Structures are given as C-alpha cells and as structure tokens.
Image 1: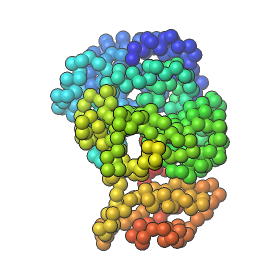
Image 2: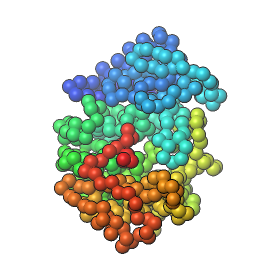
Image 3: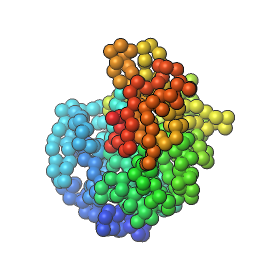
Length: 421
C-alpha cells in the first residue's frame, strides 16, 4: 500500500483523546518521518514496540514505506536472533546474531513485511512473515467507511488488520488513551463508534462491568479470537438488538478471513468450502493465503496448500461450522480423554454464569485434574456445590471439575482472551 493513496480521503484518520489527525496531516507526517528514518540508515529487520499511540502508527507506516520488515513486539516478547535491531523512539539497538535464509530471500525483493508471533494456543509458538503489500490487497475494494476503536493490540494480526480495513476505505480509528473497559466503552459511546472488532471475552467484560449499554449504537460487531457460545449470542440479541453480529475468524498464520455468519447463531462459514476451507476428520483446514512468505519459527501442518488450524469443528446441514475447541486442549484424566469445550458448554447453561474456562492442572495421582474458572453475572450468586450438582446430571464423574474458582471479574490476556487464574 502506498501511503500517498490515503491523501485522497477527507476527514480524520486517527483520534486519541483531544488529538484529531486528518488524513492529510497523517500522510505528511509519515512521509516526513520516512525521510528522517531513511537518513539514519536503519537495519532492514526491526523490532518495534507495539503501543497504543498515534506516533507508533506514524513510525509503523513510515518504516514500512521505507521497505523495512517490522516485528511489533510487547515487553515480554523474546529477542530472536534473526532480528537486526530494536527500534524505540529514534534509538536503535543492534541485536542480530544469526541470519535466516528465507528472510534474506524476502529482503532481496525489496518489499515491506510484517513478522507476527502466534499465541501458541494451537501448539508450539510460530513466527510467520507476511508481505505487507499482499495483506493490504484484500481491503483495496472496500468502500464503506466506519468509525472504530482499536481494541486489539497493535502487535496482533487483528490489531493490524482492523487498522488497515478501516483506513484504506477512508474511515476513522480511535486509539484509546488507556485500555480499561470503562474508558474504552465510554469512548465508544461518546465518539459514536459504529464498528467494533473484539473477542467474546471483551463483550462479557463489558457486561459484567455494567458497560454493555454504552455499545448500543454499534452497527456491526465482529467477534473473533476465541469461541463464542450461544448464551452470549442470545444475550447480545437482548442487549444490542440493533447490532449486526458477525463471527470473525482468522489466524496469525493465515491472517483474517471474511466470513458469513448465520443470524442469531454461533455457526459461520470462513469463505467458500473447497476454495477457502475444508474439513478433514472434523478438523478445519484453511487455504494458505498469498501474504504468507515463510515461517521463521515453527510451522503448521501444510498439505497441498491447506493449513491445519487444529480447530475441531461441527458442521450443520447447510455447511456452516461451529468451533468446538483445539486438538491440543484435550486433557488426559487418568487415561480418560476429556474435552474442555464439552464441560464449558454444560456449565455455561447455568443461570447467572457469564464465562467458563476449563483447563487441566497437574495432579500426582491422575496426571491432570480439571479446573474451572467461572465468572458470574452482576448481582448473581452461585455455589460450587450447585455447579457440581448441575454437572452430575449430564457429565461423567471424571468430567466434573475438581477445583472451581468463582469470580465477579474477568481477567483477560494481552490478546483479550480469558486468562487462567
């Protein structure tokens, strides 16, 4: 994407607090910064700390304009040997200790690139190199202009693609001055945000914190990053009746995919079956996208251009799918295989429960024991005995959680997924 193409747009591109940046101002600043950065003769492959600031995005696009390969990172991210330097506020720390052949081949093409790290929930952590120009291609034909708020982290594929999908057609992105649920929801209401991309856990957090009514003017809600349950879909229909709900789907490896969702349902289609996705033995495989250049660490299972997501799915008669969980999530309890999603789907039916996260914890006798982290709705109370009694009506004894943590608040990871307590 040529940043100069954005000069054709009118209005604001970015808003943060009292700052309102027009497309003209932003583009001129990016070009100014690109000239200054070019004079510093920076190395090609740079780690850049992901921040919720306008200046971050100015430098982000300026460095890409100069054909750098960028690795947006968080404080806890390790420094990998193929990185040539860490860029922070005009300061550069040189770091490279080992070259990567596939990365060198990409650098020879003189294209801007984005390196992204997976969360590791689908198995071993992977690091994938995307062509930035090829990622932007899928948004070139978009015309509808939206105003959104950046909820996903700038180092996450969804954060980057949210930005691109809004600014390429000429919309506005609001960057929150802090990431607290109260501030974000207040900003959504005050700025009349009409599109929101977030995780189901973010919506549940808005509910439990009493902020869900502030989202009533949102026209389109894209939920992704983790499974959505039917109970949440029904609650959204009640709380946000005028909002269109879509199941967003994608991975760091494949980037985000345009989906078609069934109304009032957790079922959706990630494109066209046989062209964009296939299902083999109950596992979802996605078509390898053109933006993928190589894997710098780890590699998913790839067969004839199809990437295995490790997501277990069910499919209805119309061909729509529902994500059940990851293969790796299966827990071995004394030799018995247990699917956490099955247990979560039972417990979430209990009145007053908002979220459930089931996982395994080490046990000297059984190998693993089941733990359930549960968040209850505002004003609701429920006991561990009531939860276990409810489970006994449906589940075998080895599927009933041994430990249950009940909370009134939801703890989220940096990627807005439910955190294990």
